[in-house]
Amino acid sequence: MVNSSPNSILLSADGTPLKKSLSRSLRQQKIRALLLISPLLIFILVAFIMPIVSMLSRSVENDLVSQTLPATVSAIQSWDALSGELPDELVYKAFAQDIQNAAKAKVHTKVALRLNYEKSGIASLFKKTARKAKKWDIETDGPFKEKLIKVHKGWGEVEVWQTIKTHSPRYTSGYFLNAIDMRKTAEGADFQPEDKTILIKLFQRTLVMSLIITFSCILLGYPVAWLLANLPMRQANLLMILVLLPFWTSLLVRTSAWKVMLQQQGVINDILVQLSLVSDDARLIMINNEIGTFVAMTHILLSFMIFPLYSVMQTIPPSYLRAAKSLGATNWTAFWRVYFPQSIPGIGAGSILVFILAIGYYITPEIVGGTKGVFISNRIAYHILKSLNWGLAAALGTILLVAVLILYWTCLLYTSPSPRDGLLSRMPSS
Image 1 (tube, helix red, strand yellow):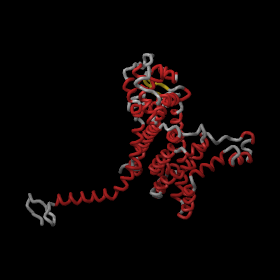
Image 2 (cartoon, rainbow, N blue to C red):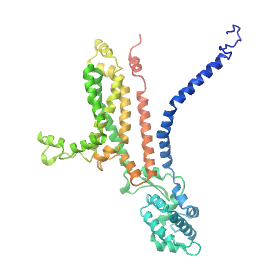
Image 3 (cartoon, helix red, strand yellow):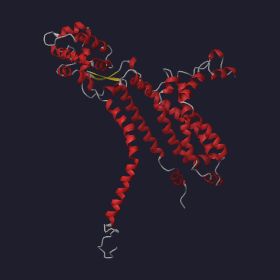
Image 4 (spheres, helix red, strand yellow):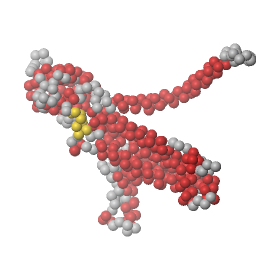
């Protein structure tokens, strides 16, 4: 029923105001849509968001020292770490109590490993002291300063106690400092010794190599994508099968195959020797270095560049090029002024995909890169699987994530405008 008076309210068939009825219907549709996508949202939360949050928290968490040595952490706060003198007896007694409790609970090795990341030798110092501390009577034995120094002379070194105090807070920036070849000391942030400065070099190598691999994939993938988009259907399907063929082979098999082919006695060097391009005693070294990593990863990631390019090129009408040529444009001018601008979104999408995959690869660089071709991801895997320094691995992963997001945002900034809008903006107005 519709009331024709100016102040009337439109009603639905059941007498409810029409505006309220429409709002309720839209709300129900949104709830149904949310229920449909809720499994995907839960999966993303569990498999993607939560690991990232956990990684971010691990990069600053440092509660192991304060939980394992609570009395020591409390007593050592009054000690001046820059005085050059050892702590007083109160600190030594508190540590003796803490190390005894930690030894009985069998958790002393964890805190020893944590502090050993900052100063080599602390792990053995803690282990030897823990074995002796199990037999001590904290109330009657003492003085503990002399007792601990007698157990191990390391307790008479100021640097050991400085390390304990410096890394006693529950949250720390030490992992991020270590990730950029610095360290947290009693005096503040300081550079690592020259023999330990490797992470900045790995970051630089990872970024530069990933950019080079991405650029090479553009150069090699653009012509292939153009052929796929412009060849007759039969030939294009055959070429597409060849592009898809690498996906039917294991990544490990393909990487191992490149290791066989690139070695000095491998297939490529043998062909070059037979063609007299290189001498037999001067075979090229293409494995266990950056060349091996570049070749293998370009081959593996090339398909990820071709598919985004192909999907965009398929939408470009061939009539645009014919129109440009009919107006007097050369083949090159028609391509560069008409076709190429419309393919930029494909280049952007493919570059983002290839770069993100390249910057996080560690299997291929590990197999063919040796010590000169590994990426920062190999170092992250090392700290997670071998050294168990998860805090440093989390800090390295966080820095890598931030770098990828910045480059991702930059790439979107320059490729987000519609290519056809850009084409129309260059056309003269009537």
